[in-house]
Length: 287
Image (cartoon, rainbow, N blue to C red; front, side, top):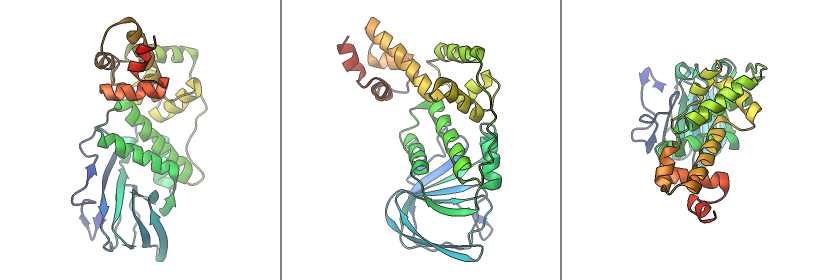
């Protein structure tokens, strides 16, 4: 944040920070926002401020006009990069997550969305958007737990957030949705690669490179071709493989989870139940 020419951190002692996480392209912190008025300021990166609890109001001044917005859990302020907020006066201390987009790192995974956000996003606004709040909360929870779901999940959420911001908040949705389909050869190549590399930490960027697409365009084409996101497809394939091992070997759940690329036994059990409706132990007992 720039205020009076100085760059300062958002919070002196954040409860959570993505600084040490592998979540490339975004930086965020979570803490209690102080109740003190904030003088004229701007951010060098597009910034989202997501209220995670409490309530009250926010008076803020932009382009000479004062705005007053109710603030409650789920309220999100969106401020485009280099836009001046002349003053911001919260009524109370507010628990929040502050997230910034790093265009230089996001450009290679979703160039169309980054351009749309950078050029056409409204300069400043306050909104209550359940879908956007869910994506932000998911990012927070994943970092809080140590990113157990891996690169593929992280990139999927990153792409979903960029696509939603561009489509919902960039004027007239200036995103280039190039019409194309994955060919049968490309689909076969992708499925073969995924099945061969299930134990690995597969990423959207890695898969997109196989068919020479940007990750954002690839994610759209993959879902159109397979009916699910790359992350869901890979998880489903891993669980199918794990089911086979549960049925034919005496390996422990911990050994099977490691063999199929899960970060921990608890993550394996969570995904297994999401896909099958039962735990690995219940599945094996029912064979």
